[in-house]
Image 1 (cartoon, rainbow, N blue to C red):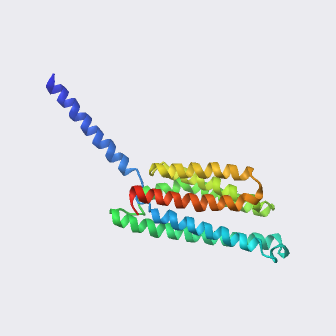
Image 2 (tube, rainbow, N blue to C red):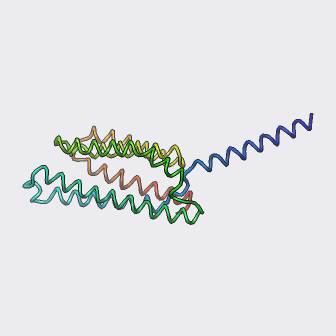
Image 3 (cartoon, one colour):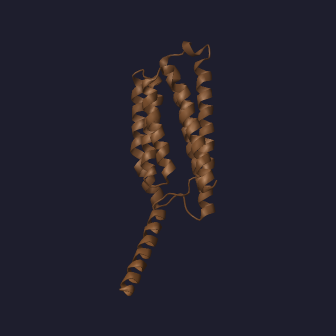
Length: 206
């Protein structure tokens, strides 16, 4: 009987080790705390630039098409810079922990997040074409939150929490007065990212 008990205990130990190994292998653990902080600061700068532009005396003299083009240029530039910052910071951390940013798991993450980003792009074009650009910020939060939730399936738990926060904030922003949209952009893309970056750094390292 004791021999059977010892065998069962050994089997449980093996299963526990296998499970832990599989969990670690399916978590994308090269996320950088600096990335969240830098992206958050970039978003706040984008909000400040947008507010400065839209409150300038000559803004109302521009056509709606020109206004949309300027806003789109600001945020497309912010997106490109954010992606570059995220890649550089995560690549740096991946090197420190002996992993690779571009891996099979990384490819799965990109595929999982792609539908939400494509949806955001299509909805942005639709809103701009129909004179609804003022409502697009809540859509960005919603779609970005959905993308992050998808990434969270392959990553650590705080990533999922971040995605949920963006989804809820996006829904709330669409129901709030339009004048608060820029404030919500600063709170979410700015504040949420900075808080997330600090939390990730404290738990997993910079």
